[in-house]
Every structure is written in C-alpha cells, then in structure tokens.
Amino acid sequence: AQSVTQLGSHVSVSEGALVLLRCNYSSSVPPYLFWYVQYPNQGLQLLLKYTSAATLVKGINGFEAEFKKSETSFHLTKPSAHMSDAAEYFCAVNPSGTYKYIFGTGTRLKVLA
Amino acid sequence: EPEVTQTPSHQVTQMGQEVILRCVPISNHLYFYWYRQILGQKVEFLVSFYNNEISEKSEIFDDQFSVERPDGSNFTLKIRSTKLEDSAMYFCASTGQGTEAFFGQGTRLTVV
Figure 1: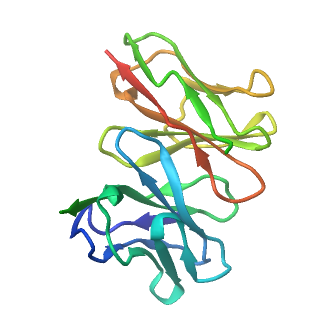
Figure 2: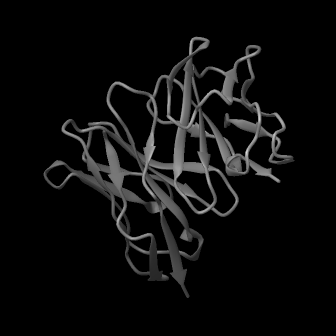
C-alpha cells in the first residue's frame, strides 16, 4: 500500500532560517503528492501539489517542494521562516487509481524569535 | 473563494447516541470525503463518495457509520451509536476536476 513518511514530528527553526520538512513516499509509480498546513484549531489548507508536471513545485506563503524520484522524496522548504509559519504540516499521497489521500503523521513547526 | 463548510463546529454527545455531522461541499465538485483526526494523531481517511454511492471506505468505516447526500448541496456523516473512541475532529473534503482536495474547518466531536 502506498504511504508517506514524515521524518521529525517536531522541527524548530529560528525566524529567518531555512525551513526543511521531510517527506518520503513509497510507491513504484510516482503518485500525486501534496503538502497541507494546519493552523491551531483550523482545517487543512493546501500548500502545494505535485502532479507529474514540474518537479519543483511552488506553493503559497513562499513554500516550495521538489519531487525527487530517485530518492522517493518530496521535501518542503522555505528559505526564510516567519513566525506565522508555526503550524502543523502534513504530507499526503493520492494513490493511483483512488481518490483518497493517505496522510503522513505530520510535522509540527515551531519558529523561534 | 468557494469553500467547504461544516456544521456544527463542535458537538458533544453522550455515548451510545446518534450524531449527524453536516457538510456543504463546493458546489461544482463531484467527489466527497470524510476524514477524521484523533487528537494529536494523523488525519485518517474514512470514506469517499461519488455519484450517490460510496466509492471507497477504510476499515474504520464500519457499520456504525453511514454517509448520505440528502439533497444537491449537503453531505452528511452519521454515527449510529457513538463510542468514546469516536471522539475526534472530523473533516469533510471535496474535489472537482483537479486532484487537490479542499477541506472544511472540521467538526470536533466529543463523546462523553
């Protein structure tokens, strides 16, 4: 079964520092991949998606992710963290042939002043 | 901007009672979903719904759960006899022609 693994349940960065949140997928066929953000007590907001077009995907709020087939990875990055980026981030895969999403366990990002 | 809306935002119910969680998906979307998130855990798929029938469901979605699209706009999740372990945030989502799912703000269900 297809799945995603998020390394690091908690990540802390200083304001202005690089944000790197890791996601690896398991699939023999490159799936559709997504990053969602969840702010406290809110729903899930789509940050960006990979659907087999460009391997470098730009999303909202300055985030981007690079699909690397050789590493089966889809890591999320942002060059400079802002306090407002503090939230939980979920990587998700849409297994081919289905319409459901399989979510990773999430990474809680803390931004330090 | 169109959005998925869920009501109520918070529901408290006694164990054994029936609850209905309501969702209004984005109007031109065709696929509808329910997910749940137990506090501190990951988001889990429950069920997908297309063309007035369930297209896929997880092992969590047992006989206590049912979904319905009673009219052209609402999509509901019913839990027949709630258990303590049903306490979670329940998210409704919908997709249209694209692949991305749009999620509602969630209903926090507390079973006491």
